[in-house]
Structures are given as C-alpha cells and as structure tokens.
Length: 309
Image (cartoon, rainbow, N blue to C red; front, side, top):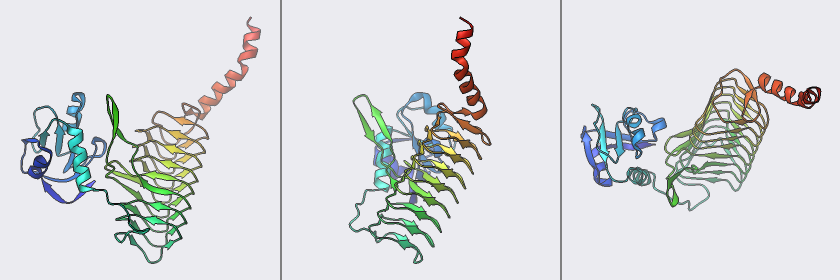
C-alpha cells in the first residue's frame, strides 16, 4: 500500500508512540508485509527469529518490540505492540468508508464500459475501455480494471483478505489495505471471488481466463494468459507464472510458486512449489508420469500379493 504523499518518520513514531532508532529523517512512502516490501516502505516484526529477515529486507522502516542494531540508511520504530501499530497505520491511511450509493462518485469508469443492472462499484475503482461488467457484480474499493475485461454475473472483486493475527485466545483481523489489479483482456466467470491484498496487490495478468466459481486469495499474482477451470482455489500470496493451466477443482496452497507453462490436472492438490513446463496430477501433486506409474503399481498390488503368498 502506497501513501498519497510521503510521511516523515517522526510523525509516524508519534502516532504509534514509538522510539526511533537509526536514521530519523526518513520519509515513508508506503506500508507492506515483509513478502512484498520496497524501499521506502514500513513493515513490522514481533517474533525475534524473524528480526534479521525483516531488518535486511527492502523495507526502510521496521516496527519491532526489541532494541537491536539498525543498518545504515534505515530506521527502527521501537514499541510494545508492533502488529497493533502496523494495523493502526493501515487503518488511518485506508480508512473504512461505507458506500451510500450503488456506484461511488469516486469511481472512474470509461464511457465505453458496459455496466449492467445491480452492479455495485466502490470508492476509487477504475474501469477501463470496452469492459463488460454483468449484472449483480460487486467491485470493492481500490480495484483497478484494465481494458476489454469481462466480469460475469455475481462475481465479487476486492473482498477482504482472509488474514488474521493469532493470539492465545482469539484471532484479530488485519485491515486489508491492498488492491486488486485486473489487467487487459481478462475474462472472469460467474460467481468468482478475488481477495484484495493485505497491503500489496492481487494481480490477474493480461489475457488470463477464469471459469466460474474460482477463488483467488489475497496477494496472489497470476501471470499472463493463464487458464483456470471451475472451482479452482488459490491460497494467499502464491505466485503463478505465465500460461499456466489449472483444471477443475485444483487447490493450491498459500505462499507457493508455480512456474510458467505448468499444467495441473483436475482435482489435484498443490502443496509445494512446482517447476514450470511440466504436467502434474494427484494430491499431493506430482509429475503426471510418476503419479500414473504409482497408480498402475497400486492396481497390480492385489495380484502381486496373491502370487507371493
């Protein structure tokens, strides 16, 4: 998530009641999770074993709860509850604003776009040229849609990230400060759901096609010209390369990488990252030639056991 204008670190420290360690004249340009931080971003860490990873990341400002050495050119913000501080910054700069009309006055829709009845379009949504948004679609705030995009009836774009901070007695929801970015010539089927990122972008790449009832989790990046059949589900922050084909009911776990031109056959479960250019099947998914050999051996197992009694 990028701020509208850069914010002095002193103002941030005051807002979250933190002590500055390191370079005290920095300007924060955004806030993001450790997985997607860029120079100028704020991130946070509250588990000591991840301190070094966070401090050595691209983030310029790190909120944490223990005093440690600060690298040159960066700043640490020391406070008691880093997650609460991080979440409060997101809430301040991406404050909740309910809709009071079906289409927000802050939405920007190209005149050539077709918007059918009962479509809901939130604040700061942008819809490009020659798009077709079918009836009963909901597009939540801060969604960016390119040109020649079709979204079929009943789909919901920009739902909150399914992301919670775990405490001993409860789960606390993170404020979703990210966006959904749908590039040109994308087709999204009926009844699909696409979560916005927690603080980064969920991206559907140019030319990709989603069948009905596909779910794309928070922060997922889908490459160009991908093809996902019905009831595919992709966990948060997974990165999918170009020209990947996922057949019906494939489930993909979170935080994985699927290489370009991968094919995953129907009903497979992907629990580990997959090398591109290969075909996979099964749960857990494995290369199809390996998995079919295993299934053939399993079919022959009863006869084998009879012969060897």
